[in-house]
Length: 392
Image (tube, rainbow, N blue to C red; front, side):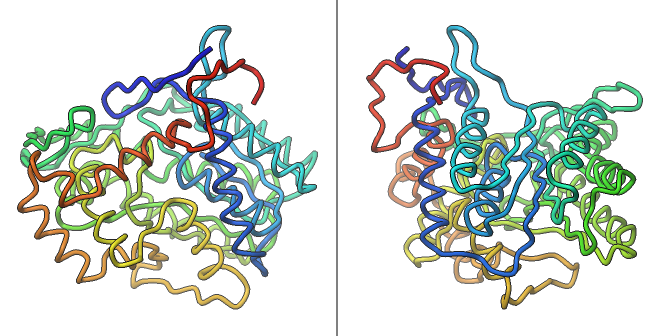
């Protein structure tokens, strides 16, 4: 089968097995070149581990910390005449690379919101890991089925209180245009919190604790984003921002719960990068394209794997200095939010149009990173060759 990218809106509905292999290898190679990260725990559970920051965290844990890992995700397997989703291939490839290094690397494909998957993971930890030292919560999902009531909750990306009108980019047509989004109602706000807030994170930690599979000194963290004023109406001050506030409140509750295990829960605030989740948020892709150009010019640009390597190596590893902000968060967006970078971003934002899009932003770089998420645009892959499914 010859596989080409088929893009519908903000998602690519095809994935290239060999391209996904190369993309994972690219990240593995980067981490290994940086050398071993000392002083890190050796048994990781990553909830939401097949793409984006979750995948990169798992790669750094395995290849940088030489740690055993369990990855949980919900991805589409291969069918007879249809390739799997990119995350399915990513996990399969990483498991193979980690096992070549003599590491335990186990993946579970299922609904992480469900009680059944939680119990499956607990059984796996007991059987092969004993206990885990770190739990990373990196789920990104548009919906959640409540495990107790079976009620389905759906998240929305909307402003709160008033309609929002602002610039965005049509990524397929390379067009900058205005978009107006009506405000969320109370039900939509609460559903978004149910899907993207901290409730499921706490359910995971409660289940793992009750099963006695958490090590003394357990660390758990979840990923978040704050961003600049440009994105606040649709992000920090919108429905997703309310969910992130709930996530932060939950981190404090979990920390209290883990005190007798000398454990800690915290939030890591990351910079804007191209992920399947960020591509779906109005306004954000255009801002990312602007940000990339500025940060690349200043030599400060980081993609997912570079940022996760810096998190583990410089903020969490032996001899590193863990710096928390006033809210107890680790800020990996420190370079993005520098005053000079944000001032330039505001100036470009005010003047960006369809006509100057590629001149004043790195929209090309944005597109390249987007295609890489699905295994396309890798230089060592022949995209005209027939790809037998089931090989990766």
